[in-house]
Length: 158
Image (tube, rainbow, N blue to C red):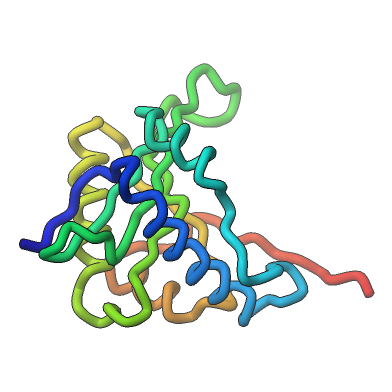
């Protein structure tokens, strides 16, 4: 049976493998910024993330209960800001589907699960950042109905 569930400690080695794939997509697009191959979290950091209710991680697992995709999220809430309204946001820090499993609607299943979770948590919105060097991800998120909220810009000083 294939399903989306909260990530468990036993999933950490596989999540680390998927994180390398994420890094390599970014490294190929922006080797000036991303080292590759690397992971943004260590196994110990992942343990703390998985234990924290404010940083839910979801995995899409195959029939052998092996993660083939993940969605890292961060619960954010602005309260009492002088400019921004008091809203609860679920920020998607990372979505990845194993390279060999892409185009099978796994990313869509993860994304829909995240939306449902955000609704259950009474979030106002779901947000994320996407690198312009990753046009596949940009197209995926647009297909899922996301629209730009803000745009980061840069000037490289050489």
